[in-house]
Amino acid sequence: MKGFGWILLFVACAFAAEQAVLSDRLIAYVGKKYGQEAKQRVLEWQKVMEKGKNAPVPDKLRLANDFFNRVTFVSDLEHWGKEDYWATPVEMLATNGGDCEDFAIGKYFTLLAMGVPMERLRITYVRALQFNPVNQAHMVLAYYATPDADPLILDNLDKTIWPGSQRDDLMPIYSFNGGGLWLAKERGEGRQVGKADRIGFWNEMIERMNKEANQ
Image (cartoon, rainbow, N blue to C red):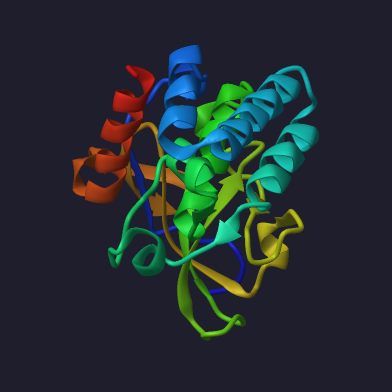
């Protein structure tokens, strides 16, 4: 499978973009629980989201990609003591660590808060074919200017934003955003077949985001 021509599965869970906006209470909570350095990282995230709201799309993508790629990569087992844990963006920034899905999720919600339409974004599960270990499971964020466009890939392994057609090192398996569950066809959204309650880690993460919003 070459490039991003085929996406096998789309899944989603509804979540309002404005819920990525940070309240003063949440920022104070981060400072109290995680410390002042953690609070500063979250405040910097807030500034990035504000800066991106009126920026052209290429700048929005660059801002989100560059900001989260500054965070330290840490495996879930080392960071959370679990084989797999999907952190909220606040959890990732507060602890200054995360793995590939956390990078993709953080960029996704950042771009939503900047005003990028949800339908243009896909958190995409891939196989990374040329990194060590070879053929490792990995996640990236894909931006589609139109449903049939060659997507732009926001990644923490290769930090440059490339079109999917130039990422032959990635083999896509499935992707999701915030709108439903689809079996996909080549370069299109495909046929809707269900809802996102099949993705337990995503739903758990959304539940924690809702709790954060109510701090």
